[in-house]
Image (cartoon, rainbow, N blue to C red; front, side, top):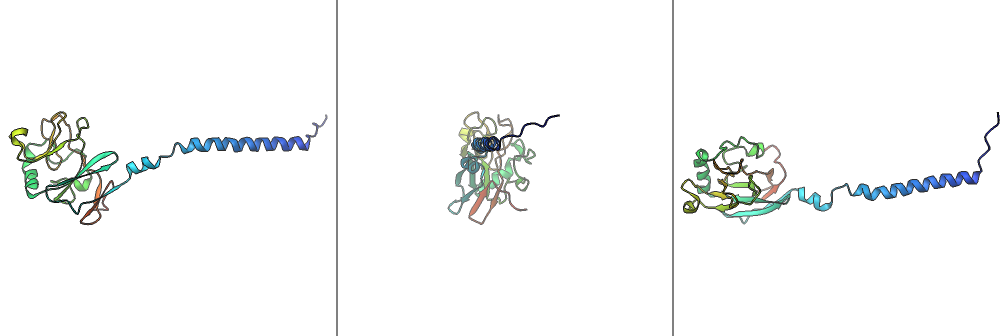
Length: 197
């Protein structure tokens, strides 16, 4: 048996250096590709919680903030608005908010943490239009059973001041209540749950 010939040390160094350079080039080429799989700063911001200052919100006023590319309404409800919600159980499709369109802490008569403030995603659950705020005085336009709330002009869905959909509306379920928390009496964060409240 004969022994294999000895490899030239210069050639061995060349092979090792070539392999190392090839590996480094492969890693350098893979890094930009892998980086494209990470979410962009804009994408991260779209899902991030949003804070809103509600100190200037008077009773009956509505403030709109953008969260995850959708309008979120913050409504400071008047005494009359709250009373209309209580009267609406017979005309809304899901008076007890059985369909999970709200966090557990907002599954109550007013679908909110504090009765006075409604926080709703302003997108109709039918085909995604944005409903309009309509007072209870709009009976001539909205019909005799209108108690006030939101009207979707696209296909006629109606919602009360708690975002509960009227019976017979094209929208199948109530408006969504996003996760939210009160940071203080004048600040709300949307997209973040309350911690046990």
